[in-house]
Length: 280
Image (cartoon, rainbow, N blue to C red):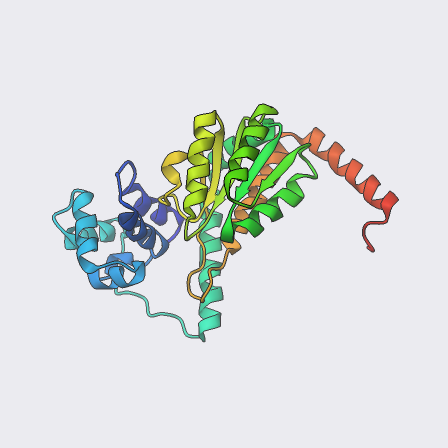
């Protein structure tokens, strides 16, 4: 299904109060939006890692009599009554990479509307300092974003370790003038990340989140959600989509304040040349 179709499936869950298990089911249907209308309840349960009765309860929570009624609605949204397309051939590694390409294609369609990205960029540009939260699996991506963001933002603070010092660092950044925070929250959604976001909101932060789905657990507790699917076909998740989203966001930050960004980049290049930091 194209990006519009995926957004149509996502609209089914808009405003619904879903349990964590139901969020997993919703995420599964969005991720497999091109084929979801042809899945049985048992297949959805298997893909989402939940029980079959949970799929039935999920459909009823959305106001349908059961999963068959929800599946009919999904078919209406696809506008396609054809049989399911057989899976393309290839080994497990090729299929995992192909799935990543499909995720990026959906991200491409999603970025036809840049309202959320541009709003997020404005919030983060205006924050001095700028905390960037990323724990466990999200820590490398937070560091990656922070490394490049520091070249165009005067004070980036990467928060990639948990424990009580994490909240101390949020307090310190807020006292120094921080008004917004970027949070990278990826499956399996560390509880400490969610707790830190809740505490940041109580402190008065605006929170921008890069996460894997618009129905991830962080979605209801942030000001702007920038979803980008992760790959789940290998032993460990592939984060190609969230990394691309992080760089898109950083580009939007540069576009929103081009003169300061260019000036800081030129200053960095001059310093790098003087110190012989790079060989090429």
